[in-house]
Length: 119
Image 1 (tube, rainbow, N blue to C red):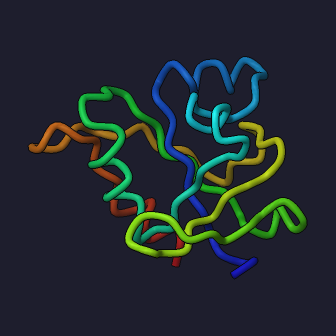
Image 2 (cartoon, rainbow, N blue to C red; image 1 turned 135 degrees about the vertical axis):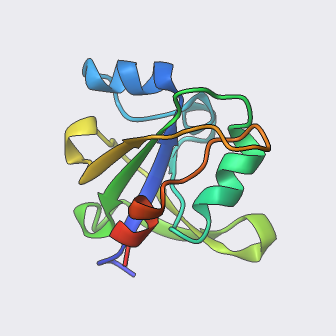
């Protein structure tokens, strides 16, 4: 699974901090001690569950191979394996970035081109 694209979702405010030099992380990452990522098939459910109402949320694509000794695939929601990075992640490592539009259910919508990027 090391060559695949993994995705990080940030609020607009957290993305601003990351662009200014802070680590790429959300409050939950700080509490849990690792950076939560999703695969292309997990992104929309993550958006629906955790980012409803978050205008301007940002989707970042990273190469899993950039975290060779820091990436762990761990069981989480629905017993699926989720990528978690136990280390620092920075904005400059992102392969691509998308600001998401809000969907009809009030959650941001993952852009199709982002999910296509992962293939």
